[in-house]
Length: 227
Image 1: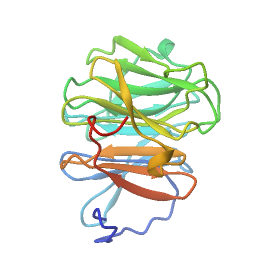
Image 2: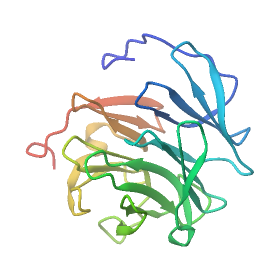
Image 3: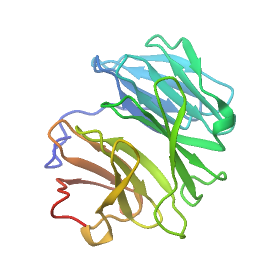
Image 4: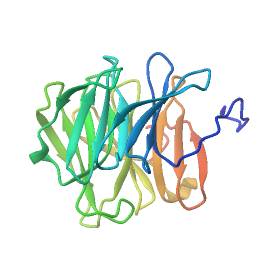
């Protein structure tokens, strides 16, 4: 789908998708919650199971080194796999309560983990943990006020700034690459309601998926014009 909403291609699925990521080779990785697995889809529509587990995977992201990371909330696990689905590294599980989503900063290679305090992903307050390439905790971000911070989706832009959806407050937090809060770049006044997931594309456009209206919204944010 392009920014005008025109659908250029589609793939029929026989399972519900929990999360999605794209490798540097163009393979689509899908989380199959019902079967506790990670599946790849080639450009020709060929499916292949890469990972199976005892519990369902919650979030996935592809790394710049060609590997991918999957998070498992029930077992507090964050695991890195190679492109064939072989386990390469297990991050220190003592860092996490219920890890739900994961993203990589392509500039400084930090790994961001959305960590929830209890089971419900859409109502549970949480925090975002930033880990370096060695898995060491660099900082924790827990929002900007005493009200509950409900992070969901995370991504970075071309400068290394980090965008985080705040589901309950209907806004997007913008941090610099070192975790310092800069501003809110999108909020309810811009039509953003229940922001669930987001990504910044190669042209600098921010795509936001909303849970309430079940929409995909596309924005071009500017720090000089949006507060």
